[in-house]
Image (cartoon, rainbow, N blue to C red; front, side, top):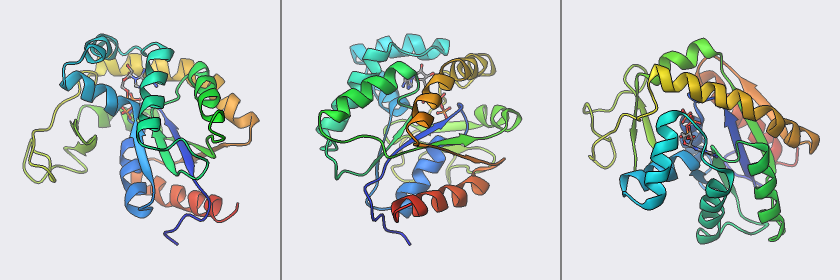
Length: 229
Ligand code: ATP
């Protein structure tokens, strides 16, 4: 089915390059009532617009470090509020936030005031050998967050977004050196966050070497979840 019978508020977890952006795009196509927000996309948009938050974000991102928990939490909760998603009936997907236990707790507190919360957390589990080689081939359309891969999914015109005709960017943190730091940060912070969700019965995982292997597993999980478990 392509419908969601129960409200879905999904968090996608996964190492950098695990394909969260790719899976998000496919989920939005498959489930038209789903909305998404990505913390990395919001931050890159701030950088592109040269806002004060953007200049703060740029310094962290370039080092492969996580921004302070309060800063990212405020950014996302403001977005949830402005988008009208703070309701027990809303259906949405978060990509890249929360990614520390502290963020997980802050989000939970913020949502519980509106009688809402995450309903499902899925970790994308992809071998490290596979994700390393993806990064250097990756290009992104910053305003939309659309991702391209020169090998697997090249744009129709080199350097240009298929939909808007606007230029694509190389992320400043998609270098081998910064990537290693991001991976270390991920592994350092994700354990306690996973435990937090596992204790609440929310955590699932899907694994595979390619996005094409992961997608049907993810769809199946969500179908099963949304039709009443
Ligand atoms: P991918 O490579 O799959 O996009 P990623 O997790 O490395 O995964 P983003 O989520 O786009 O990439 O994050 C890029 C950078 O933005 C992070 O390295 C970090 O500096 C900052 N950032 C994004 N989300 C958060 C967050 N929830 N908390 C703190 N910093 C964040």
